[in-house]
Image: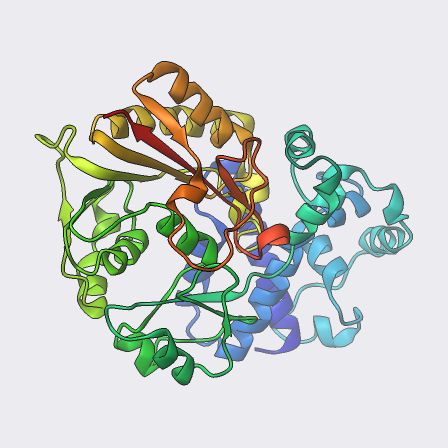
Length: 419
């Protein structure tokens, strides 16, 4: 692809992503995958260049929109043009698939955008979020708002979890000598930049799994031990089930369940690769009441803790969507409680930084379920090293963020059922 064709591809994708947000359709990553599946002529360098441009716009969408005069004036074309590192010279507009040159009105708008005083930008533009979220974020972070939002705007590293069912941390470090140890999770390794792993022997043989350190910490806080009966109630693709299998040393039983059974389709092959032999997928939970030592609830959420990976989620979240999510989360907490045996624990996990999905859910649940109590998360920490500190309202619950922990944003609460 010539430079102009890459720019036009970025414009097409930004426009499609913004329209999908309005229509409530696919997120950015799914649209990008579909776009390039239907354009096999685009090489790997072309794809990387286009994706870089698209995510550059998404990460700075608020400021670009404000500088260009608001939603009505800030078209996908203008946002891409304004975000380009290169000058808007003829090379951008040459070629059959290049964009048309800017009109005189567009040239004027781009010129005015360069003269905007960014220090006077409103908070929604500076922090790249919908305006209605500002009060929630201020309430969450207070005087740390600037630093925390900067962390959520950066680029995410690539984290690996060493699978002790297949080998040791030392073996993984030998396979990846340029990886750094994770800060908190003893089996974690980190690359500062993304890199392909699919063809690496250590990945193919199941020695390592891709898993953000925050997710690894959440799995560790489940306190799963050999011989336990564990229900992963919202298992998804099974990442936490695999981590729990390693913690349990393939002893005991993990019941992996998801209401969307298709999401579990890859778990069998992943478990085989990881040598995780104590995981079973279930399509029904009948007859399992009060059976489990641990019920793990990694619930559907806003994904606000993953904004640095999926910046389009900042703009897809609307008040009605948040309301629907919190209702689903509350229902799953009620459902999960019924599977916990006396003395067992319900582990509530959400990759969100919003109190609505975190402390507020726990408080409501505990007020309605006197048989459960909040247990300090530090009491489930199995590592010999330092315990991750928390940003949560209560010291008994864990909230992690990119700025403060170097992880995705995660919230974890340990809820114990009375004997």
